[in-house]
Every structure is written in C-alpha cells, then in structure tokens.
Amino acid sequence: MTLFAEDAAITERYHNIKGGKWRPVMNQVHLGYTSWNDPVTNTNVMPALNYVADPEGVQGIGVAVQGSAASYP
Image (cartoon, rainbow, N blue to C red):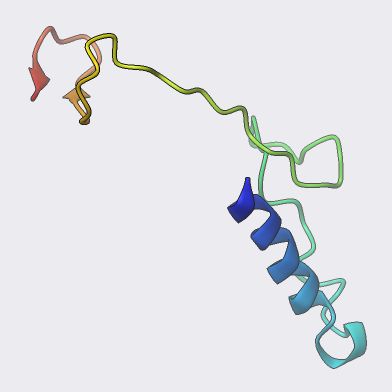
C-alpha cells in the first residue's frame, strides 16, 4: 500500500513540472487494468492482495508449472 501511494506522489510531481506543462501527457491510468481496454474509472485502482499462509510454518517460495505435478523446491 505504501508503494501505491508513492506511485501517486511520483505521478503528481511529474504532472507539476514546468507549471503543469506535462499534465496532459502520460496521464492515463496505469494500475488496475483487467483487460486491454481502458479502465472505466480515470484513477489508478489498487489491485486485490492475497496472502497465503504456509500451514507448516515453513518460509520459502516454490515454483510450479501449470499442468504439471512437478514443483521446485
């Protein structure tokens, strides 16, 4: 959430360069796309976050290929 707010601050600083000269440039929404079409709203949307807890309490990351029973590690 902090990085989402930081992105908004960076965008605002960019748009205010030279008294707002660049406001009409690069003002398209860039977060929250769910398709190739432009988003319905004209504001960035925080994507849904999902947290996954390891039932055994082991920390780490694994990689699995869809359609395969193999995984690493």
